[in-house]
Image (tube, rainbow, N blue to C red; front, side):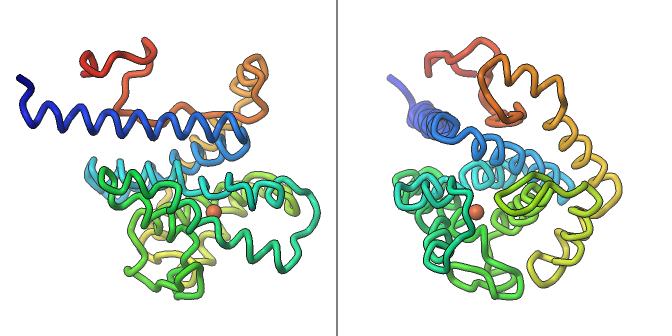
Length: 247
Ligand SMILES: [Fe+2]
């Protein structure tokens, strides 16, 4: 007879596999977003590690980073996000619904990951209370969302988007510094700008953009570089295993 603990562990693994399946679905739908969320997870974890968060908090940050933009896949938004034309005010309002839509997609997982939906819903909140959707202020914004907000902005600045060319690493660092205490949690910004942490971020960025990796991705039919730092608690080397054989 299986113990309650063994059953719980199996349920947690099933929930993690469900998240990985959802990440695969994001990739299948939109490789650009798939690559973006992985890079954001990489930067967010570097920042979380610098802050000294324990494994539980780090996993929570990683999940919020990986699924922060899942709401963009909503049918009502997908054309807007793929359209190269300038956003109309109405489209801009629609885009601003993606955090809440993402939280709704993730709602069935709230029993397993109670922080996930709240973090995803809050990733465009700002430290000074002028963000969306709720105008949360300061530490009322969930921690994972505060971490992801910095990583997300950094990645948005260093990658080409509809209207802006990719800017350099130092320009991105400067933009993060400028958001200290207005857009971003000031303590987290200080950590992010700490030279050893910045160095790690820069290394991770270069790795994600490495020509070698681009070539590999091209061979696999992908346009975007995809770092491998996701779902570290799963052993990926031998492919999926049966739940009973998972470590
Ligand atoms: Fe977003």
